[in-house]
Length: 297
Length: 169
Image (cartoon, rainbow over all chains, first blue to last red; front, side, top):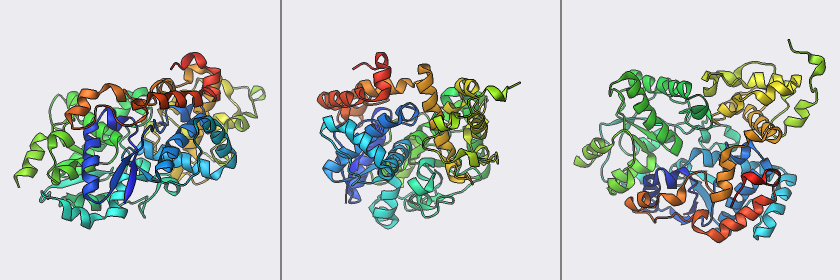
């Protein structure tokens, strides 16, 4: 199995430890990653898609062409990249007019959009191509007697006809099963499927309300579960649920919220015995003690 | 009091491109019920934006910054019972605003033009090396000659042509 690793912007710049975890864990599971050399921003919804659709589709097509030349599907961890690329691809395939406009822009670059490659999310590849069984067999430190909650990336759920891969977009289960494959138990709670609220312009445009939105989720986790950590599979969910616990602690002037937040490939990498200093080293809420406890077992 | 005889009744044709037929919207509120940004202040109520478009309230719509609060989760896309595609309505309105008032054009477009990215991907070399990665990732930031071609491509787009002072290489 060969995939083109689409990095986007946030993973390589803000949380390169996630990139490291992906690059180390996927080949162990038989998924070889090739670099999409010269790939750019997806582009993010708040950039070109909010200003000029043709320009936006041309940038997405630029990225598709690189994967087409390498004859690999793109795989990405970032929910926004995934959704932006999936929606762009669907628009390009649906409209001949848009495809022609974009190919006219691409022509001087020597590229041409053909539509021969797909866009996959990391969770989709992990569950549907690799499978929980293979993951279970690959780990050295199982997460026995540890309970988790999962943060489903909203961009992989809706709109299901364009981005969906879980057979139950409205009641997804794949992520839970992937975390259970690591030995942990996964608890559900009332606000499980609410998005983290960290993407788009909400945080920037209405910080207090966006924070309160995340606090509701965090309070629900605390009240309804005894989860010891959070697993995400989207760079925005990862950063936001980490940062918002810190904001809530500041607001309450205590340290009541201290759940370690991991990207799935990060916790997988720790369970596989990769160096935590490389695969899980950047966070606001400390993950060190949690990691030490896993490795003691 | 809004004088409905002085509104732009063709506004919906001008704005709607990717969304569904917004005339089917009957204000059921489903797009608001599951929307994180509906809890903002002011709140994002897509059904209200749809009304503004349908009534042709151009000035009100141009001043309305709530479409920019959208978290892009697309729950509204999934739930809308009339196939209006509320998320696409949001993006359609943002594009119309950017076209009619350049101050709406997101700074991120210029950043992508300049570096190919929305983050300082090329300027975190120590951070990347510390986790065992190559200092500069193999994206467009590593290939200046490709970035130049990328910029040339974007120079032929409407947004860059019409606002060239914003886009520097």
